[in-house]
Image 1: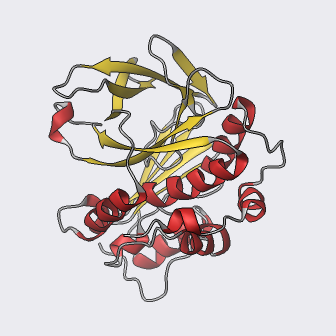
Image 2: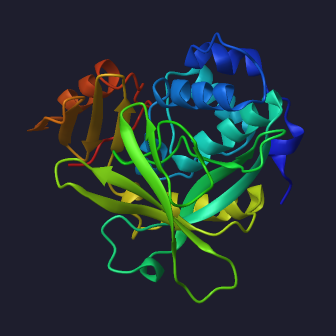
Length: 279
């Protein structure tokens, strides 16, 4: 399977305009943090292609058309494939990682490796950074974190840390944890090793997640948007808003027309023509 990501030229100017980044274009930690946060606050997470019964393309030209020009978002493979291309154009060394989403899991091994995250190497820096603009959860990273344990990281109002977990493999298992202020404890988000995964690997994973009837992403809309003052999530027809002060409100959307309006006005997502949103 050809690696189209590597052969398609990347339009860095259009990408930076889409996320509103006007800062430096250097491969340094400040730029990495700034571009990461700008991406998170500009391009929504959504799975409407999968809800419509098809796997979204991971070709860079298609991602550019969809996420940069067409008022659409995407899920992890789309976001992080696009972000990897942007980081490469800025001079960072990027490695794709496959992670097990473990939020709510009883043990690490109970979930397959279906999430795409990135390792970003900064020239002159001794440690790479975990970067991830495609995790569809309130515990997602807003800014990248150095790959190190024993340190708590504060990024744009969220708290994270990396820990090691025992497992049977030969490589160290890293776990990203997010602090839940309401509960006052840490919650594991996903687990990963540093084994590199390739674009072809994620083509296969992407197809399975988008088309399998057992996948949560193929059955109902799952859309999120992160702003400076709030986090919005549409899960099926349940709309949840988490404010910066920690307050949470929920509302059930009763009609498909209302779902479409909320997607357009609140999330900034254009609903594809012909898509029927399930109950």
